[in-house]
Image (cartoon, each protein chain N blue to C red):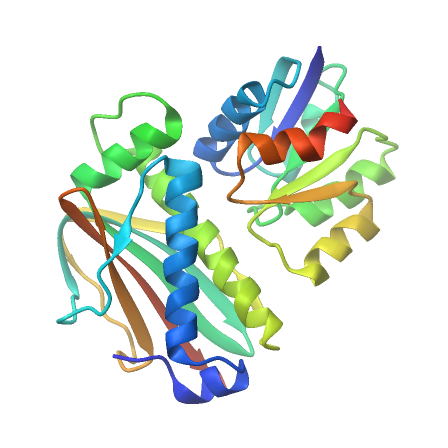
Length: 120
Length: 168
């Protein structure tokens, strides 16, 4: 069973991701939630986290900065961007910053399973 | 109403292609994230600027060009959309409905950005903005540089609009 941190400014999207993870049959124990990158960084100390799913376009601290700062702080947890920003340039920047992959919104539970199954 | 010809030329797109992208993106977002099938009723017969008991979700685009992607939805349909997205009954327009409509605008805006970026346009997305009310009017500074697509979901209709113009 895995603990997952979801960083997204949309509470609706956090609920959809949570539901989709369970529909995908992924073994989820605890979901931690954060509404922006700053909250995400604070949540890293909430407990053992096995996977981070982060939006990019967020207020206060966006997903790219969150990934950079998380890695700078020594976080080695896999980070997958779940974002509407599907362009190669911005995804490339996320990967360069330390992200392990990306999933484009909108997504299906099967797509989550395909992208995340190997990370959990 | 039509999209700015210079913007479309720079993006190597024709307006009908852009319209098709928006229609396909809207259908995909609703089918995948809302569990609702929607059908387009393009073209819009008459411009709509005044809305009654509605919610409007908007996402701004800025860069070499500026624009806005918006979704205008009657309150009852917005509550149904939100209920489907959250998997729970939503019976009033509030934070959940605003967040859901903002997120739909965000997903549609991301899709449009991706299409335009392939054409060479440099665009950044804003954070979504949502407005709602019994009666409100939306004015664009240039109503000529937009396309508005009506959609039908069961018996209810909603609009998705895109405004784009060259900044300099």
